[in-house]
Length: 194
Image: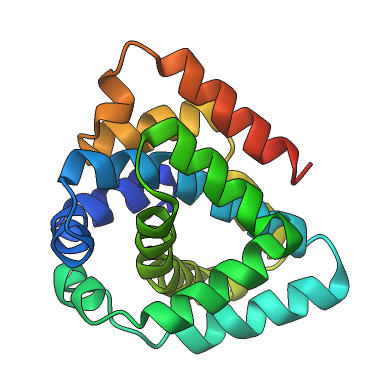
């Protein structure tokens, strides 16, 4: 089974945006907008980190640790997700760029920086769990590459990835007339990681 932005979007659509919305007290459409920009940005940050041998080893360990987490009930997973752990993950993923990324997503979506941080911190362990399971599956194949796995998720171009994820989430991000604006935001965020 292919693992791509479709897989992530479908997983989050299965009660994920609802569970996050209840926890942070936001409409699902606002949650979806933040995720539409934030998830591709997190993947790009991980890809950048994995481009060095030390970063790849550290990320691989984190993925292995989180691969044991069950994501069968996404709503329950997110309801019980550890915000503190999620914030640490965001710190590792974005490093010195964390504040700028959060401010950019917040400014573009109209969701406060605090709630943007909480949304991404809740979804970060879920994303690591999904990627960890995929890493375990793919490591059995010769020629596995962590950067290849992450790059494959962003494969259709960042703006396409964001539109696809937003569409799957049913988020306003996919239907807003300012789509090009969001693509510009995401492109500028992802340029940090190039």
